[in-house]
Image (tube, rainbow, N blue to C red):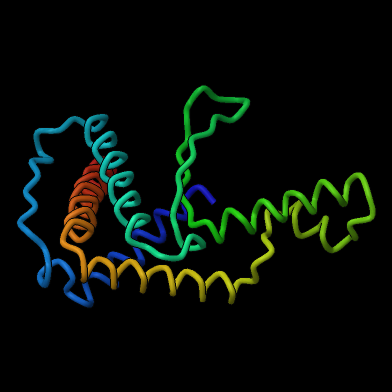
Length: 171
């Protein structure tokens, strides 16, 4: 799940590029990523992500498709990990976890326990794919209609592209 939102950003980037969202409705977004250290670039990506999701969530009229981020630390590490996902996915995962616990202490059924134990969710793969498509369409439509969200998309894409280029150059 930790790479869920990164994959969603990649999907949206392709959709935005295909629909030329940036050219249609964006003000000039100029960032000097070359002068940023890697840690500063990561901080800016986090800020840009938060700003984009805040704007999107304010504009979006369906809470099921709002995107929220949480930070967690595993028991084995002091490093915080940020995970962002739409409410429909976090609700589904919560329901699966609840069913897993119920299956462990009650009669939740073998299928429920097996699905939850493997990290499954209540949503089938096709339901998840359909909801992700709807989410991407909502983000594109709202980005086309709102310059502030469009600029937030653009900023995040520029920062992510710069970071990915640095990673590729280090390999």
